[in-house]
Length: 185
Image: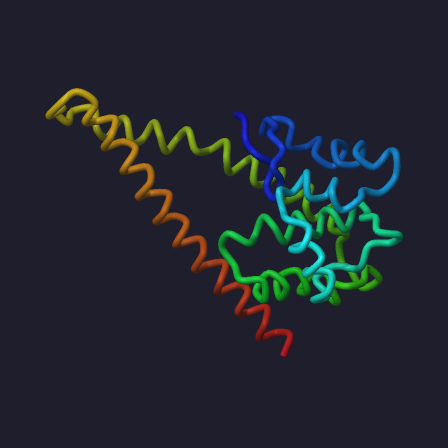
């Protein structure tokens, strides 16, 4: 199944999720990436990344170049931006990696964290076909009031279910990050 790698603008196949670390490592064969290259991978504007560096969400680039771990930190932040405020993302990442502006206290490097996340996300993404099958089956006996009506109902039901699941998952994630924050204080 085709998808956009979480936190990037790069199209890939979910079956290749276990090769994500190797793919990113290949990008660094010629050395670390410049800000423009990081922006091309992430789809972020340069000022956003520079702001994250200023705010201590990641260590500063060395000689204006970003390492693989820094890129993966940016990807980890970027993939969570759709459901969490930056402060919550920082709490979450700090929970496993201490100070975000240095790597010496990390429990797991950002490249490994991102690679594991992508494999898990691909597994979740591949389960979506069950949702579509279930919706189609639930409407099999529904008389169609006009041509294309059931297709529209399927799309609406899918959007409703995904939104509901998203809300449920967001509440669970918020409870976990709250618990992490309480443990830190």
